[in-house]
Length: 510
Image 1 (cartoon, one colour):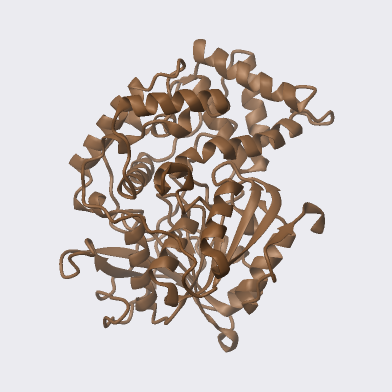
Image 2 (cartoon, rainbow, N blue to C red; image 1 turned 45 degrees about the vertical axis):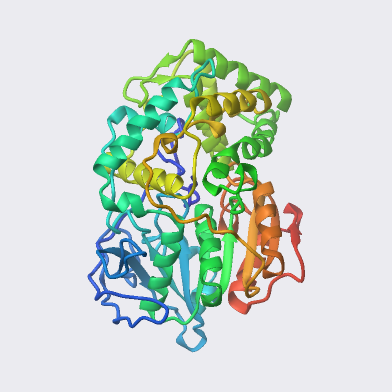
């Protein structure tokens, strides 16, 4: 549900990237002997050249073989694609730093050559940078639900209700998507979950020959990192959890997955005032109104008008600029303040009854893969209501209390019709274990709001310290945060030192 790479420019429609479908160059991994973790023996990895363009020539790839079903460890195996760039100073090397991408549906296989090279030199000196595609993603035994083109529209995957608040179409989509995943996803779709991702990470750790593993997890990757830390507490070294969803599931009866969607209610409300303030500044060439309050009112009126009178948008999916397309674009823009101008331009065009040129669609294979993994993860991670009446009631309440998101965060996804597969019990985040965690969190994050990060911080107790950053947008460290927050994370990775207590980084701290 996140964009894990900052500064990836989108067009004015902001619809070519998804929080769960990321623009990746996926290398082909060389094959390694089957690997195991913990007390199991493991064969050395066979590193080979990665396929792809623009990669650091030092990046090498391998495959770690893991059980498809951890309850049947001797059964079928799947391959987890892994990449590595060695530490740049052998004399100060500490170990491996695993980059855990957002999503679910994203991978970090090539982030060691991209995002990883923005890490400060002292971090790159001390750590092998390691990336991987989680099970089902990219080069790691990719899955697809084989959805029809209409169901690949991001305003279909994101459960926006109808203009009148009806969830009937969403329930029909849920049944159609769940059936397609069950029919086309194979055995793997039944075994994609955060707990299994954490178990795979520990197999990767063992295959690398590391006694302990440091990690930098972002958004969903922060949740996966927290689960890994809970399941394997004595195998973590320095763990950075960045842009934290509420791993406690406090908003949804302990169900992380439902809470991850519900969080958009407060996250968007936290972040939208910054867009409204920006769009009302006198010197702004994209100024929309005289005051921030007027910007909000304008946006809500325009979305309602587009609900009634959508603007044709040939070549787009859907082929109209309707209220939900505008709302979806707004949510995406709040992830990254650099995208505010694109949203303002879209609003200006829509007010005139126009649509910009249709955005270039993401490759269908990428959409199919990302949506399949995201759907399977959310649905296998918890139990979801199946009754239409539950969603009708929750959507109605949400539309009233949080008009910007129009009920989407409480609506039915494919999980409302998901088959009854065997599931792990949700992993509960606790304060038991070594104190090895640093949380970093932007104050105004539309996808993983501050309230959720605070719940994680409270659950971890003395295991963690939290740095709250006076910033807007998603991805804090080396992303949309500030220099104060970045310094705190870098210091922890390089020296192991965290702030003496929870810290607040104001913008003026530079």
